[in-house]
Length: 624
Ligand code: SER
Image 1 (spheres, protein in one colour):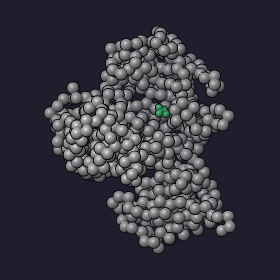
Image 2 (image 1 turned 90 degrees about the vertical axis):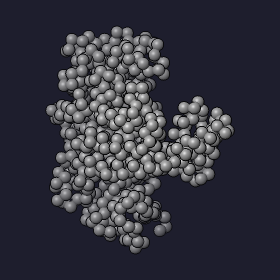
Image 3 (image 1 turned 180 degrees about the vertical axis):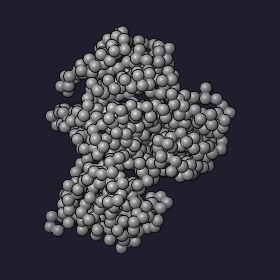
Image 4 (image 1 turned 60 degrees about the vertical axis):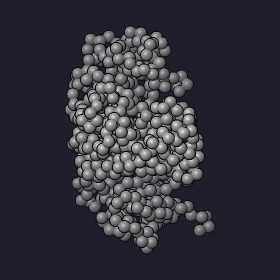
């Protein structure tokens, strides 16, 4: 089966179960300051899982673009990618376990015809400390489902080294069968939603126990052991809890969050665990074989790294992430440069990234329309980044070799790693990888000290931020979200109607806002925008939300990205006569909640034709 067909079958199946299909959200989360990328289908749904009403109802389905930067170095084996598509369906306080598991089973075994004999499932074992019981309900449902197709499904407790025990349904502890954005319950901050889950695995057969580094290689394995025999193809999360000071309490509503990797389900359908042998990558493999004169077989690692990284950057640039030294851009840079290094190793000496991107754009543009629209930009940005790195790559590799050999270093000192970074544009992770290939290490602390000396902390800061992980709907952030609407309205008033939002990143400390405008703003213009926003703040105006079709929203004068795929219904937030904008929310109820004075702290260029503002609301002194 082709990826396109699987995606369509899944979405249409859930449509028959009364779900509304929504387009994928951007890989760059909006108004979520604590994470750099959308890494799962549920991230854009958080507000709705917490009880905010979704304008399209209680049953939603989609295929969400996802990017996990933590997996960059894992790429190279047969199943890891940084970018993937997550098929998702959501019950937002509607159906629960019975419907979800039955539909999933129907989809897997009837619609796409996976053999139930090779499907294994896991459930939450229960946890006394958390006072959350064993998920007997799911076990009962799974048993009935397997029975209906003539498969006996024995439930067994996972016991290390006991292997399969003739089981079909496995109870695992909280480390394996609990899902939240932060991971296990201990790691969850107060206010974070989560719940027990039930995962589904595909069995490729005993002979697939091939992962060299798996501790289970020579042991009896089990569905969750990661020896290569089993592959997780989907996760049903029963998101009904919220962490509070007193422990876990029920959320306002019982939700289902299902996520399944499109590529992984395809691998199960092919009964081949190498996800790079699905149709998504076939043209790319052919291209690399032509360019390098080498075959995929025998060069799997390099082919996989190049294809994964260039697919990811194609999507990232499509969502506005340009290679740079900061935040999201740093990951795009790392990916392109790592792909180019592996291509260099394969003997591909000329620029090729743009050509590979074109193949992926062709594959995906009917589903992700922005890729087609942005094709020229994506190809140009990749070529620019590739040119930049190729101009120093050879020299940098020489420098590395000479410097390391000269000093006979086993641990490569900070001066060298920093030079490779600074002079030759080698991301430190690439230097680390080079060292590893030579059986050496780098001294990361010394590198960081050098970096600090050069007062370039932006990259390390962005990594820290990424690890931080969680969305924050604190009052201050919500206030700033409303202020951002006022600011956009102000900018459009002062600079004209060609101004549109191009991106935003809001933290408790500040608003960062990108908008289309060709030149630097004059002082007077900035002051005028500040005045507009401050007047609106002082006016104590109510913030009102209405739901309507995108057409009605447009006709009513609401600001929005009309080139973009909206669902059938959108939310429009109005702040009196000041602002009217399409937005998912949440917002404050009245501008009187904004305590302080709005100030533009910085106005600078972001990229061609796009300006960036950093702004804050400064607290009033008591005696002012
Ligand atoms: N949130 C779950 C996951 O990402 C299921 O969608 O695995």
